[in-house]
Amino acid sequence: MKMLFSVLLSMSALASTSQAADDFVCSNIADVEEYRVGINLSQKTAWFFDNDDTSEMHLTNVQILESHPPQTMMTFEGKDAGRAGTLKLYFNLTHQTVSLYSVNSSGQPNLVGNTTCRRP
Image 1 (cartoon, rainbow, N blue to C red):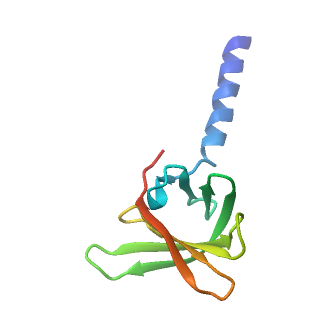
Image 2 (cartoon, rainbow, N blue to C red):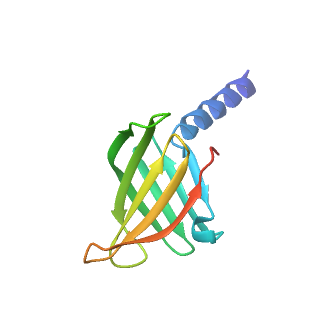
């Protein structure tokens, strides 16, 4: 009986942990294997890892594009942990693709890269 309770307790802990897991993972940004993005829709956050640093971004805009089929575009923004400036991530939920931009201190966006995403 104690063993069954222990197993059930472990399973409930795993279930609660998986709710906070990323909904999408996007690898190989700019053809760099180590560059990855994770998107957590329930927490409205995204992160970018670039070999050394992890930058966190927050959802700032959701837009429905009037196309066929309609597309849901999400914008995430946050401080670039590795350098001065900010990051802006455009996530197309419909096509499961991302475009990541580094925005310098004068507001000029520079494309870091694009890639497709998958569910982990």
